[in-house]
Length: 363
Ligand code: ATP
Ligand code: MG
Image 1 (cartoon, protein in one colour):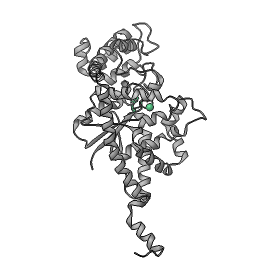
Image 2: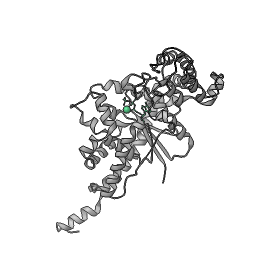
Image 3: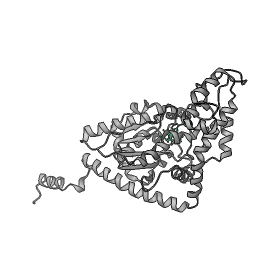
């Protein structure tokens, strides 16, 4: 079977390190691996509107930010089709049909949606669109017949919901849709990168992010005020690694060669952790090391962004072309779906002929 990727991001802000390690970096590697027949990268503006209905300008303004982040990380429009979700009406139609295959209680059990409802204080006033976004995500994935969805761990329930919809659809209407697999980061620290405040997830909505487009000085400041071990007060005190965000980030970003380059006193991360745990190693030193590593990773991204920022109309043109190409693919899938669901009346000469015969029309 052809291997096809679909993944994306909500344009609710600029992209951050969580996106980078959770999905974006991997996408670029997969794109360049040549293993995939097609790669679709979606800017999920319609999904972003499900919890930002009263703030359309936020979504509108962040589309270009996300596109610039993509390009600066190395997504290449000649290899990956980058498109805007809301411009593909076919996705809404698929969602409408898939809604019949999912129960309200099934949606209520989705742990990510549950957590997000709590985080947004929706309580009893949950927008229906937000509540059903896992179904719309199933449309996004299946419209492109995606086999592979590289995302962070929070997306696991969405992929499971998609797989259930595919199985249900295929069993009711015949083999039509493709069941996708999730592709999670290999590195445990990247599954769900915590925020700089130590909260469970770096998230645009929580304001605890290091953005890919932050200046070097912003990045340094954010690292210096990062959450560590609150019990590690004096340098001599033994420190904890677990739940210490600085070390989680080192687990996510540090490679052996970083020690040779930035801190040759240590042979590797295990030795550094050992010293911290014994006591006698201050947070500031570890933070400076993390800063060197992150600056080395982010500097080329910042430089490329500056180049792409010089031609914003060109970026919109790229998005328009990507959207047109993606729409053709979604339209072909929708035609298959309509046929399978037996709602393709006007394309079906046999249907018209048999009904005519039933009513005694002369041939
Ligand atoms: P929002 O708060 O608007 O939901 P977000 O920061 O959660 O924004 P999304 O656009 O919902 O970002 O997520 C896009 C992709 O990035 C998904 O694949 C998601 O799994 C991944 N991702 C987001 N945050 C993290 C994180 N902290 N760690 C790992 N992956 C992440
Ligand atoms: Mg999210």
